[in-house]
Amino acid sequence: MFSVLPETNLPFFSPQEVSLLQALADGCQSKEIAGVVDRSKPTVEAMVRMLYAKLHARSRAHLVAKAIAYGIIDVARYASD
Image (cartoon, rainbow, N blue to C red; front, side, top):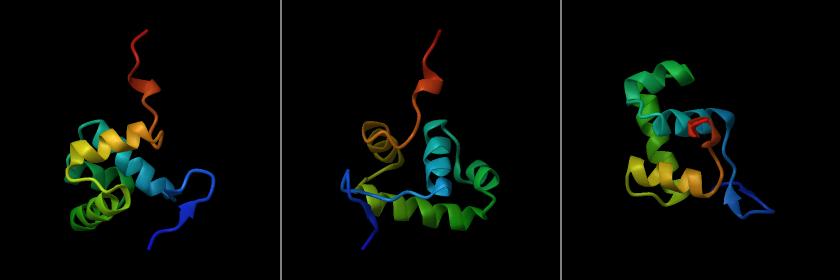
């Protein structure tokens, strides 16, 4: 169904999907994310549903947790000095 990266067996994530996941990790809502990825709110919501399928997630929090666990998004930016 989805293209996978052979070395990890994880689905391929476009730069836009990674930006969306990062925005979810930042706590952004669909309307805010729409501005980040330059898409409409309904498109963002459809993208989130697609990401649920790609990562087998049940919620936005689960989606972010899996993205962090798989190293898809950068959590170093949240580390305090």
